[in-house]
Amino acid sequence: MIPKRLAGCDAAGAGQGRFGRSVVAGGASGLWSGVLLLGLLLALQVHGQMGISVSTDRQKYLRYEPIRVRVLLRNYSGNTLVFGAGTSKEGYVDFTIDTDGGFDVAKLDRTANLTDSLILGAGETKELSLILNNLYDMQKEGVYTVSAQLGHRRLANDYVSQSCVIEVRDGLEVWSRSVGMPTASSASNISARKASLLLFHQDPGDMYCLKIEDEAMVYGVVRLGPRILGGTPDCDVDAVSNIHILFQSKSRLYSYCVYDCNGQLKQDRFYLSVGDQIPRLHRDPDIGRIMVIGGRVGVPGVDFEVTETQGQEVLHSQPSPVRAVGEGPVAVAGQEEGPVSPVLGPEGQGIEPGAASDSGKKKGWRRLRFWDRSGQ
Image 1 (tube, rainbow, N blue to C red):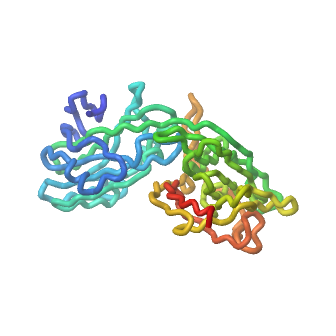
Image 2: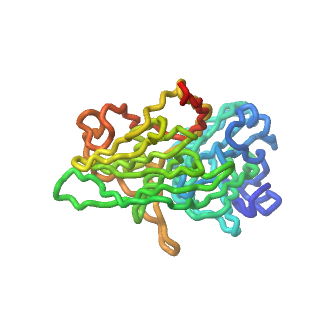
Image 3: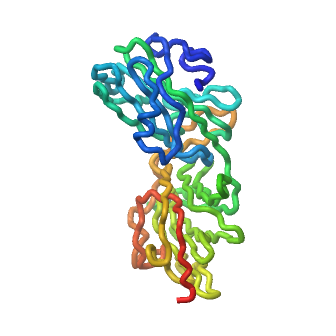
């Protein structure tokens, strides 16, 4: 399927490319995560001199969650194609995105060069990976139809992939807290961000997600794990504005994670209930430290097994601008001022002492196989 409009194309796929060339179909429909590269290669349809396909890691996304796409390119022209660098563009790869209302999605940065320094040798296959909603305005709820287009000055035609469909939906807020941002100076104004725990509906069940935002920006969106019926998540914020979340993963297994105000994972642990002692968060009223009391720490490979990991990118390096209806684009915010000293370890004020830092890890939700050894 080809979108309704693509660089002047009609519904049949004929039209004008960026270099004034005709546009022909050059790829297969989008494939979901878990498909091997060989499968993508077999799916590429050859029309002339190039093959192109586009795929995503999942079909349904939480609003503002990074939408990672992969574009697979294969060169059948018999010649090496140099796409250029910077503003010198001999070729291009771009996207056309249509909404379920029939509107084209605007590009946030029209100067972005997705093929910067790309060289595609004769017979070579390369994969481009990028976060689509960093480049296009996909902030609204809806269903988006995405296709990729490839062109080069040396080619007689431009080529367009078949499309894939992406659904973007909001989550249901189950907890929120306004969090003050630590500052480097006692005279600086104190800004605030909102941390929200969301319930996101997807197959086969609902998912807990964390979102960190202010009035202008979204700083982090991350999937935490599946919701267990009957379980109530426990959330709190410590003295240095880290967000602590404890929720039930299995019948006796609890997931505990700590994130800073930029959506960076600081700590990640599992706890087990012991008898009637259920893990819960406890705040030290004197210094604002948050710790887990009750139960015991779960040991991976002994108490449970991680059977699958869904990688989850966090929007901490390039926050997403929030735009109200009728407003123009909002400039991307820079990094907020904050303390440069770590908050972990024996001197830490916010996180449980003695815990190893997971700072910088990209946390994804995991499928867990839990071995109930309560009788041991």
